[in-house]
Amino acid sequence: MTLTIYLAFAAIYVLWGSTYLAMRIGIETIPPLLLVGTRHLVTGLILYPFLRVRAGIRPSAAHWGTAAVTGILLLFVGNGGVCWAEQFVPSGLTALLVAMVALWLVVIEWLRPGGTRPTGRVAAGIVLGFAGLVLLVGPARLGGSGRVDPIGAAVLVIASFSWACGSLYSKHGKMPSSPLLGAAMQSLAGGAVLWGVGLLAGEWRGVHLASVSLRSWLALGYLIVFGSCLGFTAYIYLLKHSAPARVGTYAFVNPVVALFLGWALAGEPLTLRTGLAAAIILTAVCLVITAPHRTPAESEAAIPVPEEA
Image (cartoon, rainbow, N blue to C red; front, side, top):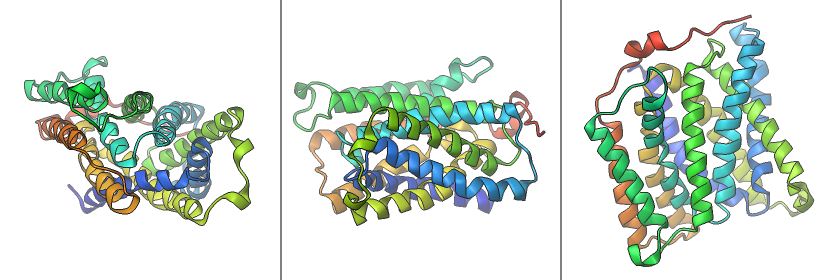
């Protein structure tokens, strides 16, 4: 792998692990959909003009169509669902449940036409991962105290599934040859949808600029710069230059970072049940991401060549 790919992996490993706590702080005084919508809309407005000129590409209607679909799947349902759920689920456990995206990536890649069938090791990891999910959100008698809010957990499962769908659609859909330009387009599309839904949901009624805390403003700035401008663009870049299962490795590191930061900086509890579920889910993710899989070169024939207008 090249240095650029290593740096991109470092970005999605560490920076994204810290964004869960940043979202938790942001929604203290900013409604979740407007927070995430502002994050991605501002990111798109910053990156798109610069990358549009630098790449010298005029995105076609097909490119914008793919950006709209992936923006909805990745950012509206995926990231928006995660931020909304953090009202009920601690940031560290949120990251742990989102780790299921690594399992969803393999399942969806297997079920899609022309996809890759998982090996026995990967299948075992998938089963183990869902067992950990049941332990985390199931009845108290399954593992004592520390049960996660089931509604918040359900939203996180849907969000992780949507993120996996959007990731694979982005990899195989028609997008500009510049991955970063594509990421900016997705940010614009997803941010616009998040803002629109947030306004329709009435989130604006509870927003007063004077009541937004400095902590929330700083969290929003951190999400824009480190979570989106750096982290999300690195993720989109990796989707074009690495295999889906390998890209999903961020889901193994993010929960560790998020659990530690939530405990150290936000006083989020770590129970025996949480620890056991975390060990099971992360073991499952490790089984999946370390299993042999096709390289991008082997998969290249199945990926449509982007078209520029």
